[in-house]
Length: 95
Image (cartoon, rainbow, N blue to C red; front, top):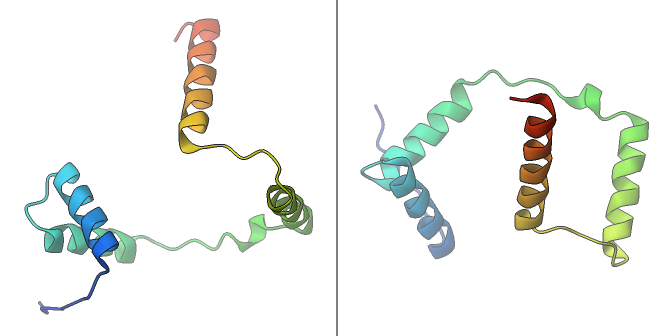
């Protein structure tokens, strides 16, 4: 086992600390070790095949729309929409 020292910005440290506490870790070090272990032990899959010219063109159009002042959505708005869609699906499908 190796003891490694890293430097974090105050903002990153505060976020890591919050997530460590929320996840039940005793220290940020335990949390960071768990994150790295999960990241490095997962098989990495190549998703390049998903980025077809059509999809890239669509993403470029969306980015241009956002830059031009098009509608964007907050995380809360997205969550509310997904929750409503889920509730509607459950109501219709009896799940």
